[in-house]
Length: 147
Image (cartoon, rainbow, N blue to C red; front, side, top):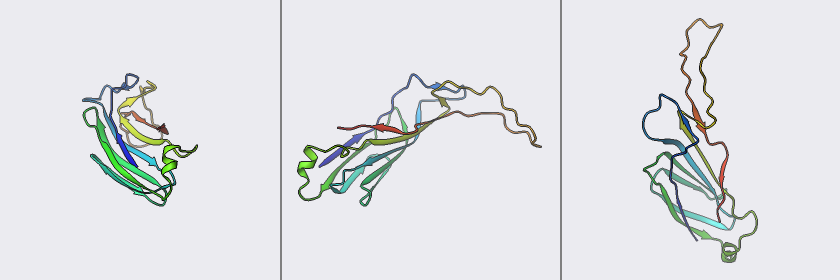
């Protein structure tokens, strides 16, 4: 079997950027976890950006891309070696045989909710803390279902 995956970033209108943000949208710590069906014996994967590691025991590939902006388009291509007699399983997978991709990332100096901290007060300390607050948007558990 073959696998091909490409990742792109696009502007998100719901993001509210901090006033200290300069430059284009940069998404950091982009990681994609790809669970493979149990009938895949091994996978040979090549990527154009970042690193990919395939765990044969857990049947999981972890692709760590790192930084992603609107201009870069990382791609993963590869082949899967299937167990003997599993060609029929590829054409008609059972429920649970196509698990979703798990994607994580973060965007610095941006907020999805629009919440903003206008002031910070620390009491009981002998030093004066820096009063700046930085926003960060993290992905949480984001799944992409594939067919």
